[in-house]
Image 1 (cartoon, rainbow, N blue to C red):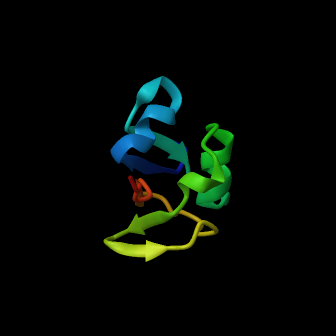
Image 2: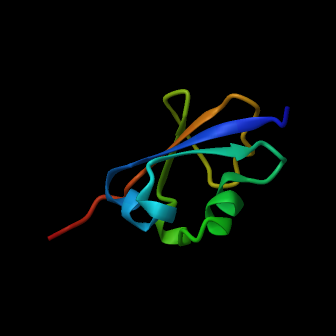
Length: 78
């Protein structure tokens, strides 16, 4: 069985994800989170806040098997 991590997209960013999904199982293959998200078609501007285990991580974080990475939508102004 391939190693995987879970990506959860919180807030309006899910609108820009494939099929508007909010949760994905992705391979934990040594790619940084930013690369995995770019491969999904999400723009780097969406990579404002990434959390793993409740702690903020950088876009170059390399997820491990079983990690749950949460992408939080950037705050909008109005």
